[in-house]
Amino acid sequence: MSKHVAVLVGSLRDGSFNRKLACEMARLAPDGLEFSFVRTGELPLYNPDLDEGTPPEAWTAFRRAVGRADAVMFVTPEYNRSVPANLKNALDVGSRPIGNSVWDGKPSAVVSGSMGAIGGFGANHHLRQSLVALNAAPMQQPEAYIGAIHTLFDEQGTLKNADTKAFLASFMAAFATWIGKLT
Image (cartoon, rainbow, N blue to C red):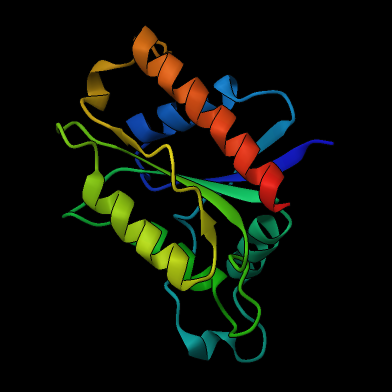
């Protein structure tokens, strides 16, 4: 039986390297995983007052999309040693109302990519910290910090580095195993 993975990309940029990375990872995944990209840029900033009564439709749709997924894969750049604001907001929206978090017990994977040499290490670990606080289940190993991301794709957005492709395929195989253990 296939497992459904919601993919959240931290970058909102049209030509985002992290979006290209996420698409490539979905292609490299083993059989048995299905992917849907869940957008985060349209979510109103979390405000508890808006959860009283009828919450914004964007929140409801987001919570439904992530809630029905068997697992979540986060692929994000690093902004100022942390995650982009839209991704943090998505965590907040999904964690509420209290007692109804879509993250609770959800197998997850975190991949960070940046043009720098350390591959978004700060964002990766900030995101993991939040996921642990939300009782999600982030995969511990292997870790994925993709440096020099701007050099890895050809003009069509296809991953051209064979070593990176092999690493990402092994990462996705490990993630499939992780999901299988927890669901």
